[in-house]
Image (cartoon, rainbow, N blue to C red; front, top):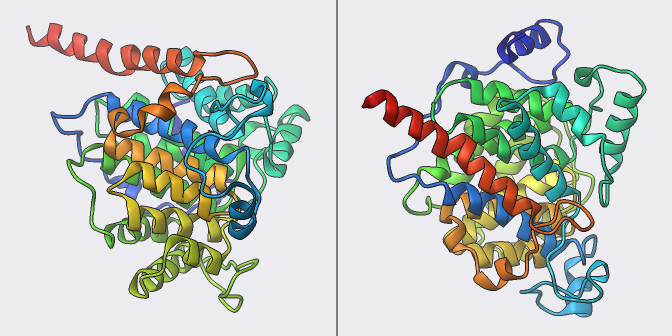
Length: 375
């Protein structure tokens, strides 16, 4: 069954927590002629760098982290690298690159295969929602019924690779694949809508020659997420806005717009809405960091690492956005030089190999075929 037919059945049976918004009837604009695969490399390596910079010091309040480590601008000594300052992965990098691995094996996105891949191998720092998903799948539930209803940020990390099979054609299959991928581990309306908005923003960034203005980030997010999430009801679990009840997308847009009007630093703003793993905390943090520092990929990632609580995941998301916009060449060389490219405990270079194969399969091979047809 084609993924479009699968999604239609999930909408019909109400087994996906998502509104069938207009984006499913709108094809993404074709990528411009200047697009180069280094943008994809930047997206994926930016993700891995953000994760690695944050996962040695995650879960701390901004003040606690600064007291212990000062301003973090480089990899900290890592106990899994015998104290060396190397960028090693946590679950965020693993999930992302395992998704690439599965796409390469199938040449297309097959949801059941990706779900099965997440159940193989040790996941470093696995979250409670991912644990529940794996338990459900191993207990015999189908993949489309295994993802808990959770508005955590974990599903966002399996989204960037969804761009790969669609680089040569701007068709609605990109949105279909993204929706199915998102629901595998977190079948929640806010999570599914955020994943859809994330991939739409990434696609737009791949085609930009310069950073967008600050107001573009919340506008684009709301344009996609509002139609898909609808008028859901969420409440903050912490921070300075405890009385809000409503959709995650609206809370996100209100918070970042107000913070920009007040000219808050990213640290002040993220402290205000509490920058943990809940999407009402993660999405404002990600968007506001890009609103303030989207023109500087290094500073954007550094601010995500230093100014947020769930800093490995937030920095991974920010790294993907910054890398998609600025490309591999926009990432600091000192970080790339100390990123071994692991997706497991000791598979140095695996991430780089997967990107090399992805370049060939999803970009160069299709370009060659097009050239042959033209001739």
